[in-house]
Image (cartoon, rainbow, N blue to C red; front, side, top):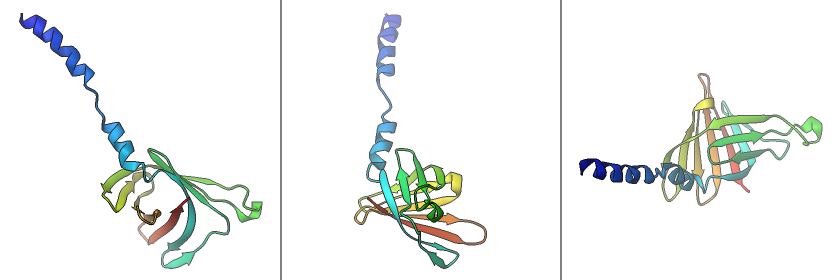
Length: 132
């Protein structure tokens, strides 16, 4: 009898799925999208882009395309910031970490603005992006 109960119990264990991936996608759905570059600051010096640079956030990665003015803003290198981890998701903001590039990000849900803060041993660099 114990063997029959055990055999009937095993399928129940395997049929219960882990929905953590679905929860992670729900956490980041507001963050996902395409952004355009607004401004930046490197070691206290402000900078702007000559072209309409774009940032793309997908379910697990962030990357940016930096268009080159010498190509009439038709092409340029892509910076892959790698996978991100969400550290905070509340009614006002989403915050996270980009381990591959030693950066933090802050997304304001009401203004749809994304700020990325890169840290190095010498100074901080921030980039501000607006969601399309």
